Length: 309
Image (cartoon, rainbow, N blue to C red; front, top):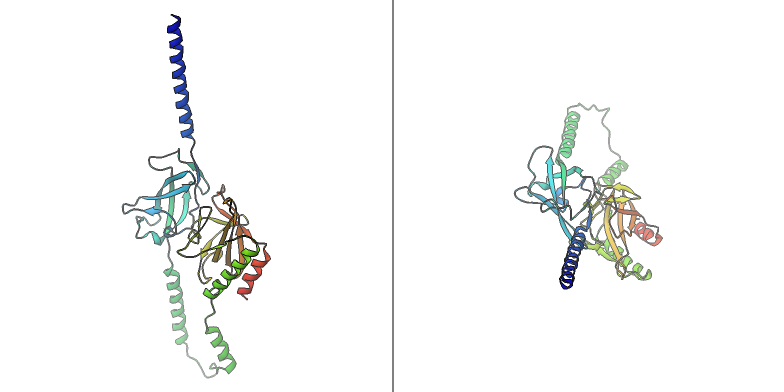
């Protein structure tokens, strides 16, 4: 009898161990990686990482150090046209739900997706404004030509006025060019050596640099950026022209040997004035944005100013 009781006790103990082990596995499985929803507002669909199939299904893969998950997008178009891979470049996002910076995790899976996002888009119209301007110009020309000009209104141009008009009609040189880019690259090589921060890598179109998951310059205009905690718009340009708060012409990054800290510099123009922005952000923020500030390094400031003097 005692032997039976002992055997029964061992069996019960073994079952409890199995149950506890399974529970531990379930608890471990429940723990999942957390992701931050990007800011898509104001972004042209073609410049995002959203992929749209021929059937109209839209999704994006979010990656982290622990794995990756898929986010599904339901796109609502103002004009009712279905968004496809072919026409997505004609539309930009004007609203999104949930809001940027919202948190979601891989355990909260909706079928094959970790999160479902609703985007509202509208058609980007670039030609309309230029056509209106042309229309205004042609109307002005027509009204001017139909007005009779008397001899008293006729004015002979002076040589000085001719020179002034010629000077105004001469196109201004671009803010940024290959020569300036090469000179800045040479300076950054010497400067990084003096700072004992080598190497500083430059990001170029088709040759992105990675800064803690941020790809540059590809992510400029795609990922939400802030300067001094204020949301701003940015574009990357090879000549310094662009319609944004900051027009970036050069990107450089340094990551320490420990791979957990570094610096990212953006050389850009704010209202045509050269400025240098810097960030050391190495992880996501609650608002889903990358936060920059104006650099205090006088060497970088002076060099960029000299290249634009």
